[in-house]
Image (spheres, rainbow, N blue to C red):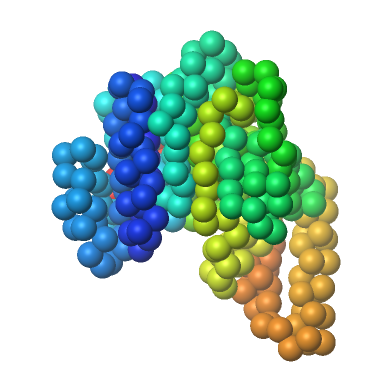
Length: 311
């Protein structure tokens, strides 16, 4: 069985469109779970009224962040003895046969712990060729990730990648038992990189399945002080967790240079001051220093045991 998990936080229109596409899937053993991440409005009631028993609706009492919301859906899937769980951004639309192709690839290559479809998007600055993600690389020292943005076309059944974007992580539940679930401390951004690196460390492979495609409509749309703060903070936390002190120092230097440019641009061109990014970098640096002196338990394991995840 495949369980598709969609996290909703005050994004009713996008979530509705995503769920409608999931319900067209031709894969027979498929369930859809929507996690309302403490939206605090009528979203959950409207979703329940619209889709009824065709989906499972989980209501979090508060906003648990992307990883925390996803973990609720993952926990539900494990209890249903699912073989795979597909964590999706709510601003995606799948093709009817996408799950069929993903399962076929995972069943044929039992070493894979997580895959992604090729993710297309409307042409724009973040998808100049109409492809938003077809694999990617990670540099913890530069505190950045890069997406492959060319169609894989007639590539092999699975193309190996360094990380799988959280936009559409098709996860093997057995691999999650080995590597753990999302690191909830991150709340927003870099949780996909962290989980990808933990899966690799546990011996599982990561790949992109070219025959499976979906469309991502909201790329580049999340820009806020909260997002910027978490992005800068979490880049340091993930570098500290997976890299050496030298890697952390290089990541801090890279982020400091980036931040200095933003301050210069803000002062010279009267753009918004990057206060949020500054706070995020300082918070990340403080936590990295604290963890260097005394490693907390969740930096070592990073996870809640699956049985303890609650709404």
